[in-house]
Image 1 (cartoon, rainbow, N blue to C red):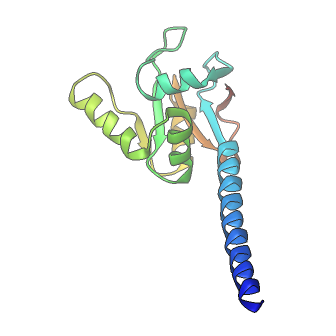
Image 2: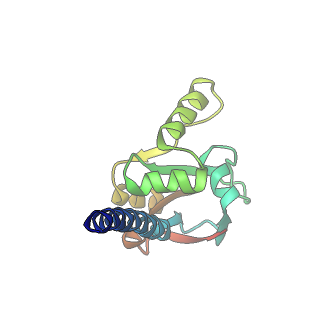
Length: 152
């Protein structure tokens, strides 16, 4: 009888550990998704973008705003927020995104986005650059930029 209890106890422990890992992963990904905030220069008339428009902008397929202004794309260099944005909105891994832009630049079919090490640098750039767009963590959002709502 003790062997059966041991096996059940071990299975229960493994099940609970697996369940905790899955729940932790789900919670962190839900939190990370909620933190990605699309921002743009205050003069841009758009109030929202859909997921397809976001992908088109950050992949260089949409290069002007509806009023004709040039879209100036800015991204973070790396980090959890950058990775989450790339995977969630562009359906790529960060390395696929880097390779995509290397290919676009090499073939002369695109201009690489402006890349920043910190959200503060990205925010400053977007607030001072007409036509600029980027993304930040919700906690980094400032009044100097316009927040775009995202239509899913």
